[in-house]
Length: 116
Length: 112
Image (cartoon, rainbow over all chains, first blue to last red; front, side, top):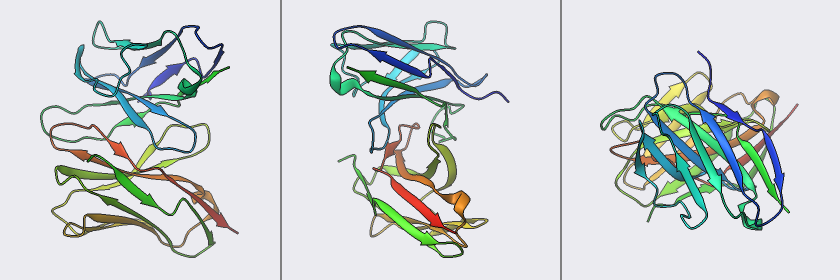
């Protein structure tokens, strides 16, 4: 079974520029998550999709971050404009779960963003 | 409060020893408690998970102990090996989804 695919692996941009990350979840996984992992910290959930609908985006800085999952499969996360504090690893994860049953979330390798 | 507090920040254990990492939570709505292992340059990978209806779960050398009344849970790695050297995250999730709240992580180094 192929894992969660993310690209690019690394990205360096200047502050105030824009950047986009792409994620392809495991086939058949209805739920997709974007997490932000700042160096030395645990991942923090930014947004959760169930198919192509947003379940939770309460921690997404909506003034600069946006995400979409138009066809209920792959997803993009965009930052515009980027700030220095956005430097982090952006992790995508997916799970089968439906309803109230917790199922394992599988993580991709992440995209390491450096804002200079 | 959604926090999960994890300790210690780092841990050095001799090969063959026992590694113990502790976590505490406040939100009584949490009902799923996984531990993730992360190697440098990789995403977190599920190691073992427990639900609050049991006090202990063992898988190979890895054991979760869960104390519902104290709102604490811990990971025990028996016979620690150099290959176990990684960052370990505890996490918790409330019912109705997989919205994981992670601890800050513990960097484990197993000395050979």
